[in-house]
Length: 81
Image 1 (tube, rainbow, N blue to C red):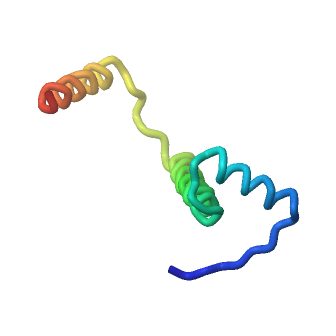
Image 2 (image 1 turned 60 degrees about the horizontal axis):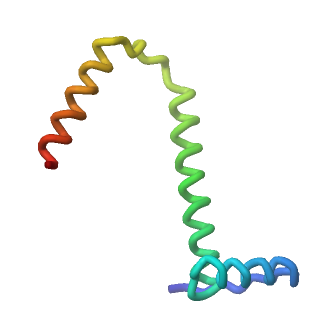
């Protein structure tokens, strides 16, 4: 694993230390890694939303679509039970 040193003002360092203590992280590095992972997830979601917005419109979801969806969900639920 690579290391990275960052400089924080005292107020931000105090905030990080509080989060580590209050939220059960073992170290400040764990906390920062979690923040970065969440930011990556947000970026992936943003990219998917933008790709969807740029794609051509699909066909409208009517009653037949929802009936088919209900059947698929029921079938999946039964196979898991």
